[in-house]
Length: 291
Image (cartoon, rainbow, N blue to C red):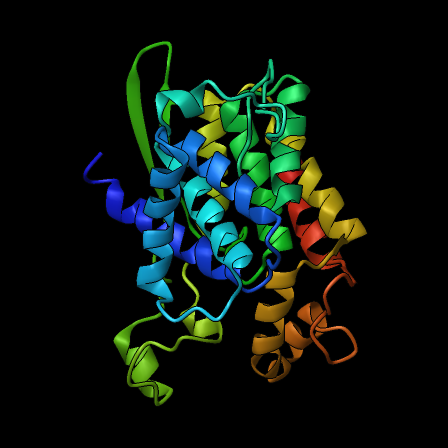
């Protein structure tokens, strides 16, 4: 409990600052006091004082009304639920988001499209490793600035039946001909960050294959179908992708291949714009069909 306290207080301060900038009016006062009392497991006065102390240390000269201040206290109180008291645990969940419950498993990924692909594989009879491969392949499509089939793969797999833990290092080797002498002959004094000379031998595809051969239930052909479909039909570009893409556009424009593949009419795809990568769809299809 003592170790968690600094993290709880940091969260309380952040939310208190946010709430005080948008909430006004005295009608929030009583609700703040009552909710504070419940979540802190003490009296209304003591609870509000404890939450207000957090706010006071952050904004000691707050110009907001009493209602706004106590609304911030409520926000701070609510964050105390990170380590809830017995009273908090007994509260109704009627105002909470339902927990995720499933018969088949849950897939977590940075992109909802990738997580959806893994969940679809589970629903069609695949196991966790099949879902991993499908999810990873879609991530390479929808977030090309991160990784893809031309990159590396690392995995840790726990086999519940045997209780054994496995690790896979599917990082690529340096190309055999990419020697210091080769680089020096091309006036390259250190390893470049961009261009073909920065590329290692891809390891991700072999990593997919090794995982499925050892642990998978479906074929590589089946597990790559969501990624192939997403690359062929396209996907709406989300916020973070659009930001990264825009920042990388000048560098992408310098190379005819990357400009043709990743820019639309010379520009990075905008938020919500549908981006398709038919060349990647063909490459994934070749791997799916031929290994």
